[in-house]
Picture 1 (cartoon, one colour):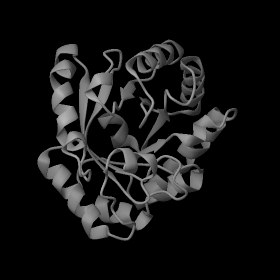
Picture 2 (cartoon, rainbow, N blue to C red):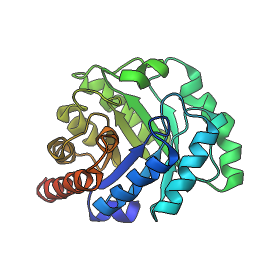
Picture 3 (cartoon, rainbow, N blue to C red):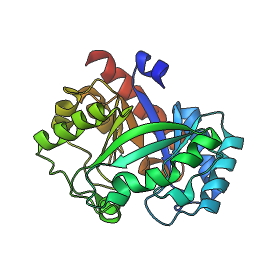
Length: 244
């Protein structure tokens, strides 16, 4: 990922095991790889168990040659089949379980299994959707740039490798570009942006504002056309990165 980021923006395709069968997840991943995506991110906010996660990972491994990253919402569903894991702190949760406790419960297993942990400061912006509700999040208002910058700088000072601005799956509009720019101004670590990025234009706007890594999910769940949709998003990301 570090090498890719030196060359331009990175695209990640999100697959939620709760939204399709493992075989369908593998089909989506294969089409996304053909479209040029860099990584497959597997996980979901609710409804995912370890058996479902393992089955999806194994099918995706057989269908693609891409690195697979997971983001379990609980220490009980960490898969040793994944190449890496978003070792996340949901920084603006009001529940210490999501801030650090689940991470602490899974840390030894991750180390012993040799899974690469990508330490990530993760914050949720209004409206937050299901992840905001399940994660018991004190949402960052869309116009509160100061709070967003504060979380970003705190994440870097804590030593996180990535900072992730999440708008929520299925959100009507992604994280505002003004917030992305404000956060990028205080960061030296890569900035990940996800939620509501369902068109090439939205992906390009996020990259132009400073996003280094774009995560798209809903756009690949619509059935046919995954390869073309991913390719169009990546082409616009690269175009906007070159001129930003």
